[in-house]
Amino acid sequence: MTNLSAIERAKMMNAIIGKISDIISLYGYSEIFLPIYEYYDVLADKTFNFNDEKIIRFIDRNTGKSLVLRPDFTPQVCRIVANYLSDMPLPIRLSYSGRIFRNVGAHKGIKSEKYQIGCELFGSDEYYGDLELLLISRRVLNDLGIEDYRIIVGDKKFISMLSEFVNMENFIKMLETKSVSAIEYFLSNVKLDDRILGLLKFLPDAFGGRDILDKIEELSEFSPILTERIRYIKSLIGKFQELGGDIDRVVFDIGETRGLNYYTGVNIDIVSRKDGSSLGGGGRYDTLMEKFGYGISASGIAFNIEEILRFSNLAYDEKKSSVLNISSIEEAEKLRDNGKEVFLLSKHIKS
Amino acid sequence: MNSVITVALPKGRLAEDTIELFLKKGILDNSCVDFNSRKLIFEDKNKGFRFLIVRNMDVPTYVEYGACDLGIVGKDIICETQANVYEFMDLGFGYCKLCIASLEKDFKYKHDIKIATKFVNITKDYFINKGFFVETIKLYGSIEIAPLLGLSDIIVDLVSTGETLKKNGLFLNDTIMESTARLIGNKNLTRSKYDKIKDILEMLRG
Image (cartoon, rainbow over all chains, first blue to last red; front, side):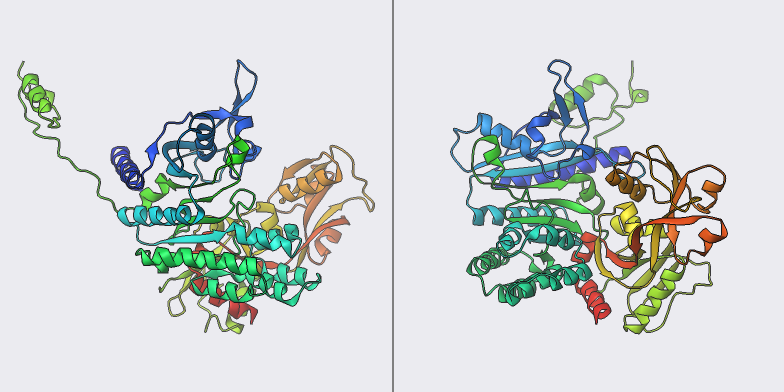
């Protein structure tokens, strides 16, 4: 898909990784290194979209336990925080970078490993944590020169609040595919208050620009908690815009259901408008740390480097390796002492 | 933003019905698709559409991977490919049934029966839910021949009138599912091109 040679590709990947890493540092994150594999039991109920068909696993010959090539960094970072950093003052900000692995079907045209760089924020309040995700995303995308992107904002808190009004299990399945025909049929067979019905009917269409939030607020008027929640999102986006966020690149999707059991609040997907590929994503998962025995809030975001590579116009550092016609190794070493890159050609060297 | 919407259409009747529907609903002014030509890509620059003619089983793939924004395909194909796409609406046309047929009028299911079909995923799921372990044999066409030659015990295939079954001496034993054409959409593209896609959805509903 790209015309880059292996060398150019590596240079470009490094440039992108370096750039994102610099930006994450600007927000006060420190990098940690994480193991490539992890115990199955640690990940099983704590990983986004975890399922046996999607992981690559093997047996630890010493303990007989299942090991998994990491499919996601987040639970690993959580484990480190809960086990080793619980005496650190909050908030804690950690970042990571490396490959994640997944088991992919044959003939699907997707690779089984991908390079990610991301960050996790623990113990911050919701508003500033959520805002930080948006600000980091914006800065990364702008600085990498990605033009045609959209940040899709969903909210799992709003969706889960709806379960107070209706049995969501069947409804969620239909909402997942935005299947208007099925939802209309389903809702015509359940007895519900007209006001909640009006809101549910609108949800498959609840994606678009900022006017979607106004519409949802209007339809949620009957419920103080729903209204309060949608106002929270509005104030979040208002602040983002105030700080120079480009609202035209933000798409709201209040009917988004992906990761309903994982995310507990706002979640974002950064996508290319050219082919819909996912450049990154993240969100808030405030119940995740409890599972590691340290119940603090958590949010984070990760960027997919290979996807970004295809759309970034970042100019990688073309440091010209200095002078080729150096006549001796001694001379070359002297130049290197002074920090010059030297590319030595043996045919110039006098013996 | 002035962007072109790319639509994957399955070769054949479904594609013709779709274009007709788009014309009726005013989404298109005139048909840019010439079904008699051997071309596979048609463009309506005026209305900002591009239509691709592909194999029906490939429609969900084109859409899921973002090569197309939208697609038209039968529910049976969506179930078989298990594509992760939006399934906005039932378009009502393209009705067919996915059926089980065999040489016997009352075929009794048992373990280890051999089943010839194009729809191996749906077939496996159906029999696992019934508690039978079965062997599926993937064929790409003329499935009806398989039991006649002893290649399989039964077949799972699409039936519209039942004429083909009858002509080949097969009996219809069971219906697994009924199917009609659906409008599907790539999840990320639908949302990032919401302005245009929502207009199309609205016109189709209207």
